Length: 180
Length: 294
Image (cartoon, rainbow over all chains, first blue to last red; front, top):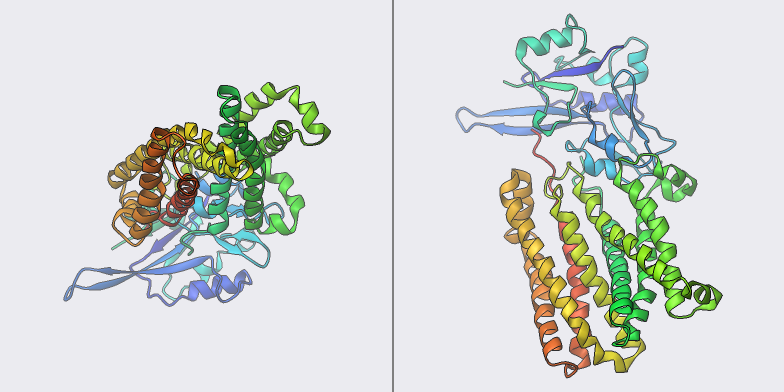
């Protein structure tokens, strides 16, 4: 069984938010809802100033704090390692939103349940790639099987020494970042 | 990205569940240890315990979204015993009926009360265990959240338990003063309870702040927000001065002057303890800062 993950090359991100729009389109979200974000960070001072854009989304942690605190067991991990919320059993207690150290979950007030990045599981199971990966004009994201050493994403992570966000938190994320 | 998913409903719940279970403990302590001093305090404590926890639990239910509109979803609430909410669901389901039966027993309400009176000691022992469990669990609920480093410390449940006992005693004393004006003199005996538990609370709060300042950047940011940042006027004003120092001094005098203290000051000290208990919970929730991820 594959273990899916994404490598993100933040040196290529231009902050255009195409990934956000593609995600909203794919998951039929409202304009104020999204499963991915782009955060800005200033680096250095003039004249060696640079602005960094950091695309963020659910890290599909292997040791997911959100799954541990969910009272109803609505948050679960699929056999491909994708962390999902079962909309039928979620009660909307928002404990998972507090527990997520990355704050990557949102509450859908219309359905009263917590929602998050699904790594476009329906596309992925048909052999495709998530919408945020396909749509990116500068190909910031690489999607693939982290367990296959020959996959483009594994090769990229090995070559560039990409790291997940805050690996010290012990959540074992599956989204890797190449920083300059 | 949302900074805090929980707001006033959860804060009110944390406060009321604490005060309710504290009032139960105060009532049991009064009934077992000093039944001749004040029947009114034991009765008041038992009367106030159940309803406070029930109102708190209603706030908790109101904060649910799908689980509130479609209550049958709540049957799933015990699915994951690694989740503190599952444990809370179990603890509250047991404690609420016990607290209500105890109120009926001490106040001889209906045949249920008369029947329960025969088993009063068993109700008091089991009820106290679940009262401590309720008060402690409200602290554990947020202490296990590693998404907010400031909360993620074993001091949190200790602080919540100490605060629950002092706010519970305060709630019981206020109702005791209302139902029996003559009891105001005997309430001075219980001022010692305030002196003890307000001291414990102040000590644990001090430890929490000092430890947080060195524990991690995020915990330090939260603690900084309380002692010198945006929330510091509320922290020093509502929690430290009005919630701890003033009621502590009033309680010392209340105990020393035995029964000579004006009624307004006795009840005033208790109201201040309640304000402090609510404020400390609100400030802990609002000062929670997630880890710096980028």
